[in-house]
Length: 252
Length: 293
Image 1 (cartoon, each protein chain N blue to C red):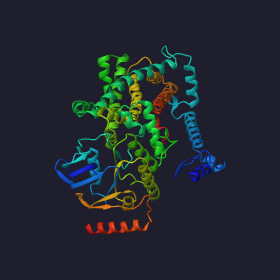
Image 2: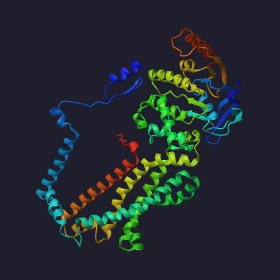
Image 3: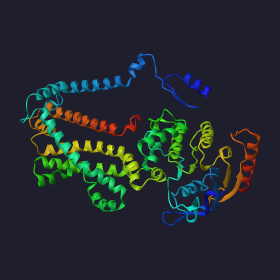
Image 4: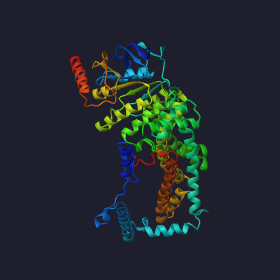
């Protein structure tokens, strides 16, 4: 199977205030298969968000390159959808207006746009909330809009940057189930960044762990061979959780 | 699925549910007690206003200020008379109209130039680099300082008054439009980029709508400054306007005319700021439900 997304020896150095060098990523190489759910798991300050922004094309790597279907990525594009940690909904647009934005920017005719937006609003379970403004929604609902907006642009790859980091534990757990449901309804290649090991095992086909502290380096690749739908209390789940935790603690 | 349908039924008609998240709508009902009446916001408004008017009346009636202060009622009577009688050829409506017209012309001219200029400065660093030094020279100058030069240049007619209003309203209009764009969360632009939008999509979809509230805040500040400016101009030299009424009252030691003029300015300025607030509500519907923002 060929890789959908391939990162080749990516390093990133930020230069702050003109002279201070901040080394964020060091020699990251990974391949994401088509329609795979790959989770990047790492503690805070390990450069995971930067890696996702480089794949999205919002940052250029200092070294190495990102390939999408074998072609190098040169900038942001509608073939990759990004879901932001802090939602980044447009407060002046309704739920519908936010979701239809991608197709609208691509010049999709109004009727078609309406159909697409409605479909994804229903998919994320927000039917009936089309005319609500973001400030009228709860955190979980806001991120549903974020997911619907990314999906509505019909990207080949979905990039999610700690999408549930701001949610409370129950809503987070519920949104993880929803994410699994949505992904199984409409399969895409997914790159999901998180610092939460339960979230990683619950969702991922494979997990890439990053070493803590900057610069972020690849640690290991884990296969999650658990049947879906998964349960947090499943013995196999807990065993894998223990193994990964133990291995990560060794490196820290 | 059946379980979920039942769940929604149980929530009642007004409530909305998506899976585990419920939006409830309820009406608060509390018994009417004396304590609630006394602590009622509007009740307290009325109490404090009445107390103020009463105090004013007592002080005026006691004669401490001699001819310098009249009772509130005398002000009302004086101005009711002005609705039909004329002062220097104009009724009260005529004078309000004269001031309002100056404000309207000056305010529109200033905002039409200042807002786009502020937006351009924030969006394009080269425009900013060119305009900023000149703007920074004029920024700290109080608009009232322009009154004398305006009269030297334009005489005592309408032009000098409108000029002063333009000078006074230009700075806050421009600064707020400028800051409105500079303070936008940069990740919002990333959203447009990732969705495949171009630079002009970013400006149209993010920069403009995001700067609207700041622009309107600037308009509100400008408007109250415009009333200060028109008053200053009318106090110096004019044959009409609310400032003229105040000057006439001063000349003839007519306290009712002075105080009434001041109250009228407050009233008209308040109404005009309501108009701007109404326009903002119309153009920024997403801010409608956010209180105290």
